[in-house]
Each structure stands twice: as C-alpha cells, then as structure tokens.
Length: 225
Image (cartoon, rainbow, N blue to C red; front, side):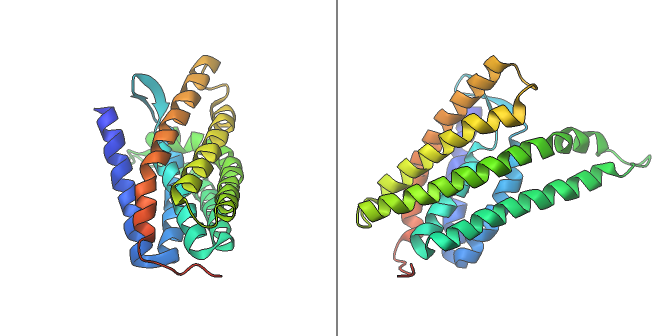
C-alpha cells in the first residue's frame, strides 16, 4: 500500500506544481515553495517502509521544490530562482519561531493536542535547522548546475539538466541532512539505511518530475534575455 501511495503522491504533487505554475506564474511557484518546505519538514518526522526498507516521508514534497526552482530558472532566470530559495528558508525560520511559542503555552483541561504537537514540533527545530542549511546548499547547487548545463548545451536537452542537477543536489542534501537531523536519535545503521533508501527514492522522484517540467513550460516563453 505504501509503495502505491508513494507513486500516487508523486504524480498528484507534480501535477499540482505544474498547474500552479501555469495558473499563477512565478508568484504561484513562490507560494508552493514556501508551503512545501514547511510541510515536508513535518512529514520527514514520520518513518515508513517503502520498497521493503525504512524511509521517512517528505521526499516527494522536497522533490517538488527542486522541480519548482528548475521551472523558475528556466522561465524567469537564476536571480528569481535564488530569491525563491531564500523565501523557503524564511518560511522555515518563521515556522520554527511560531511553533515553539505555541507549544510553550500551558494547555488547559479541554486541550487534546498538546502532546501530539510537542512530539512533532519538539523535534521540528532540529529537523528544520538541518533542512535550512542543506536547503540553501542543495538548491543553490541545483540552480547552478541547471544553468551551467543549460549554457553548455545551448538551451537544449532540458531533461538532462533537470535530472543531473536535481539528482546530484538531492543526494548531497540527503547524506548531510540525516546526520544532522537524526544523529543520536536513530542508530547509525538505520541512518545509513534511510539515507540510501531516500537517495534511491529521490532519484525516482527526479526522473518522474521531468514530464511535468515539460508540461509546465509548454508554449511559454517569458525567460528574460
């Protein structure tokens, strides 16, 4: 069931990114990135079994951020894509501040969510701070590689720059992120296993997002010269 849900989630989320980019332009993509980085850092706290191995949720949603920055780079240029990365980082920091204030409030006798919120958002600052640092590095690397490959190929082979830039960036992000976010929480053997599985998953996600990148760019030509 989990494996099926993984593919359904990937198709649905990539389709939503495509629709958002075509309906609302770069503003819609900016909004998606802000939402995705926050929700993905919550989902990554949940462990599941995928393809017979232990993994965390959030990989698909993180993958949509790379698709989003590729769309921004291709349509509106590197400066716009980098601005979107900093927007995503800002949303993470704001979420950390607001959630920590929220769980600091003493609940009354009618409250039924404090324990759940503490479980999730108590871990959230460490996860989000690890994600922030790697989000900046990996997405800047993705934008840089995407644009460099674009220049080297004369604007051809969109599928190549999309997949090479995304796969390299996400694998770099994974190895460092899991060590920072979950080191000391899970045994090292489990961390290594989750990292490898998530790299495999994100390679699959990167390959799956390519058709949606083409759809988001179909018959649009608003890249600045």
